[in-house]
Length: 279
Image 1 (cartoon, rainbow, N blue to C red):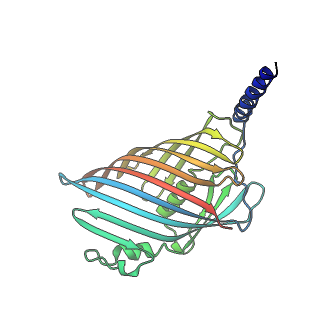
Image 2: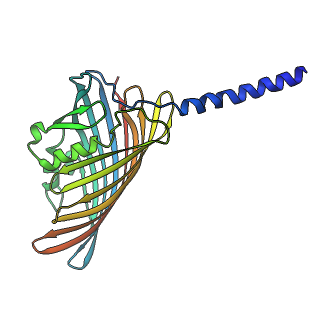
């Protein structure tokens, strides 16, 4: 009998953790940003992208390998919103096209003068380094106003900032594992783009939430028509709501029109972003 009791006790010890884990997984959770004035974060993003263009019947392939470092500072936190000050700390790029290689590193001045293009790329890139962009965001992650500061009133940049941060948008209600929610984003940069994104909560623990991301990208702009897809995953720190790690794959078909000529192109890229709070 003692052996039987020990067996049942052992089975209970094995089964109970699984039971509690299953019960917790079914519990609806609230995803929101819980940030404080003065909170600081640093993010690194690596981007590998291939652009295949057709110019006057000839194929042109551009390969880009880019790395960014971003700094973030939180301010003006109130009950339903906060300001986020974003600074691009560093950019590193290697680009190959038609046998020509272009390298740029914001932390290495020897790369600022390219043998073929001179300082054209470095001049544009250097304008972004250490410049602050301020966005006002809701606790759900939607972006309201965008202040480009010293960068100037560049609509393309404003649109990119808005769509970039809005990739981490949460619903205004609790969700369970397996439930999805949607978000629509319209950017007004060099070409208007519309993004429809579906998020799905795939797993939740006490400390983290895991989100699957799927989206479509379209543009009604006649000079730069495009259609594409976005797929990825996010890992969220539930204490702050901050996305600590994400990966994305993006595929886009484009049709650009310029001076009566048509330039079809495909863009395929993969992105990985890692972020942590600065203590």
